[in-house]
Image (tube, rainbow, N blue to C red; front, side, top):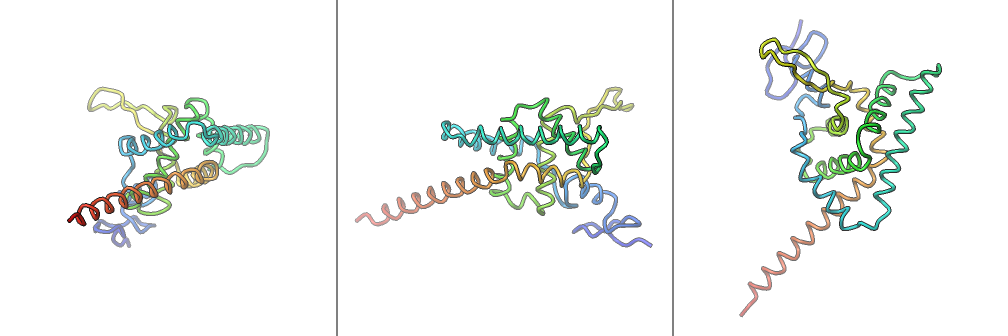
Length: 221
């Protein structure tokens, strides 16, 4: 006997072997949490602009080249992982799939684009924490935004109703997303956290300057 979906505000019957209805179960699998809304490319545009401006301000820093090198090292790790499996070495299905995604990205997408996307996601998490319902949801959205940088993860199907082919991204299993998010965090997460701190410091400085100006104006005799 089924109960009711545990997602807030949803009274639909839960699936036979779970706590959520079919809709929220699918959303949890796809987005990392039953209440998580997908982060779109448009949502991330402002944060990408902040990352690029920070790079411009620190154009002579070696950090950006190091970030790209760390990403390329991850691509190399993924390639070796896949080659080892092809040569008979054991490997988990999720790790192999995660490695496949990394190799596709390394082949199709400039390293700088991947780096900027990861850093922008960290900025968004810091500045809009309510957009992410849990850490798992953030990791899922991070992976979705990065893997969607390449069309290699797009499938096509024929829509009989419209008479046209439709494009849809292949969804990533939660286990695969967890592994891939861990790799991205290890390679680039520290820089993402530091950029988030710098943006917070700049915002606090601007607020302080704004208050000081108004206090000075109010003190005029």
